[in-house]
Amino acid sequence: QKEVEQNSGPLSVPEGAIASLNCTYSDRGSQSFFWYRQYSGKSPELIMFIYSNGDKEDGRFTAQLNKASQYVSLLIRDSQPSDSATYLCAALSSNTGKLIFGQGTTLQVKP
Amino acid sequence: DADVTQTPRNRITKTGKRIMLECSQTKGHDRMYWYRQDPGLGLRLIYYSFDVKDINKGEISDGYSVSRQAQAKFSLSLESAIPNQTALYFCATTGSAGWTGELFFGEGSRLTVL
Image (tube, rainbow over all chains, first blue to last red; front, side, top):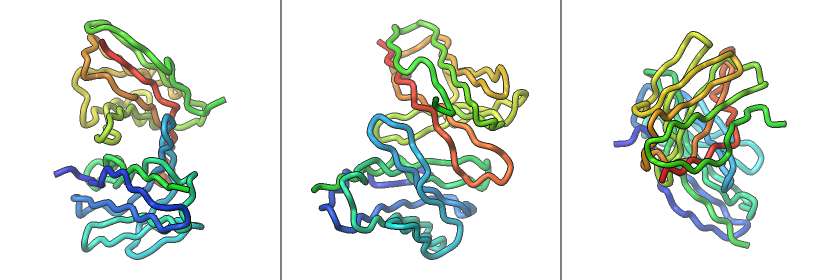
């Protein structure tokens, strides 16, 4: 079992819809979780982080964390074609203090 | 200019050749990392360094070595390249104080081993 798992996709949504990206993790000791966005041919960039159970909102983006279920998600409201990218979920390992990345989910937003 | 610079950006080489990928940063960060990215596998950590005298293996260090020449420079070497080392390689940096989990990535070095 991978430490951080994501559905590779591609996830395709129409413009204006809500995109829901999901991630599960195996390290129960992990306390911090991150979403990075990577445009094709570019490097990853941090867009959200979440430490506490519940929701965290930033503009059109909402990160959700459920530690009991070991589940993290990213919701993108009013999806735009410019949101088309690969989204990488990462967990901060409780053993090593390093970020462990999932394989990434490719999102396609169709006009 | 980019804060984290990788050279070369693209390299094609042959099996058995020695390759060095270089990374330099102007962010003043003390922590530097080398990742490789393969389709469907995400980012995997090769080596990391928390300061000039500190070098640590990541999850896939076999076949690679690193050198931290200065706080701002961290090089990755493939002593004898093999085709399954064909990948996109990223250098990343972060500071240690109050770390939020944000890594700052270079633009990537695409390596092809024939």
